Image (tube, rainbow, N blue to C red; front, side, top):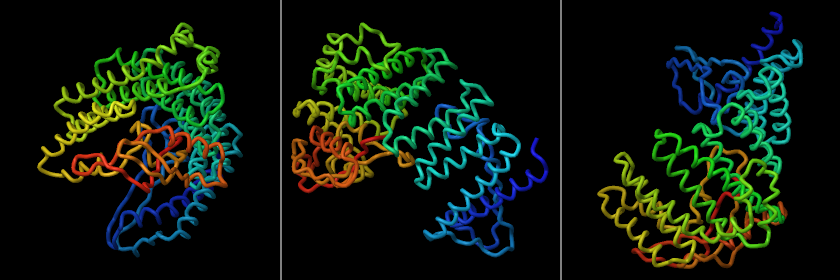
Length: 458
């Protein structure tokens, strides 16, 4: 039990955190003198597949109440870099004081994992990834002691570990911990449960990512694992009739993406996939080189079917937006362009342009979204999440022809003095890629000196 003195010190520490947080909040909200605003951060229930909150879904280390009373002086505006640094330091100090007090009640106090998680999130936010990683791991260990080896409450800690490992370029460790996360879901759900669809798809996308940077003879293991993951997601999708259109589209886009890399993979490495460390539960018939070789040859057809299904699903849903309809035609055109079927690609692009011209508003904005500049393909690989700390970008300057071919490539990021493996992977990714060209008056044109920025690791 926490003694009264210790409890008081913990709340004093949290008060420091609250004060430093209020500086940023005041700047964001633009609170004026005389306003009375009380913001309470509660403990919402959330799905463990997407939650970033450990334990009992609590904001670590405790509920925080921020208040500004009527008639007081205006809140301090914390807009400068120095103030942000100060706020970050105060946040770290507050968590560390709270953790120190909790430790007096034993090394495995239940609230310690929540406080450590809060500290780790703040460390990650400040770019201190190595310390964040070890702190996430400590929080996970304490959580497992208190809640069991297969508790979902450790999922947010695992996600923090994975994000930190990505930022530190520990890609093999990322793969290992992703599959640990999958095992947690499999321990708590039947393998065919539709609730597993998001984690299966997430792992498929990760294996496609790491395939780009792994240049060893074992890299093909990531393709076979990606195929297994997205196949499992599709199989689970067949178990329910409640999937929304967006989820169906995302699954089919991922099917096409995996088939693209199967079809473009070169080398005599297929046989190594039979012993894949990620394929312990895989169907060995699927992993036979002859079976995979056939899959690589039929990649175009499989992706074409997936994109045609996307168009059909979107057209059949009366609630879809014009943006979704245009995107479905554009990405089907992209698929044909990736395999050098330029005439077919132009037919789909022209259908998308026709949809744009039918709009009475936002024609220019819609055109700019898809046709005003070259776009890296497949489009799904170019997407990124702005709040993903571990994301690694490639920035390059290059010429892009009207057929979507790159040339005169100059890698800007990672810099020459940076990670050589990532630079080589970046160069290979861009050199072997295809781009949707820029269009002017409905015609594809050359785009010299184009600056692009695409995510290499999501």
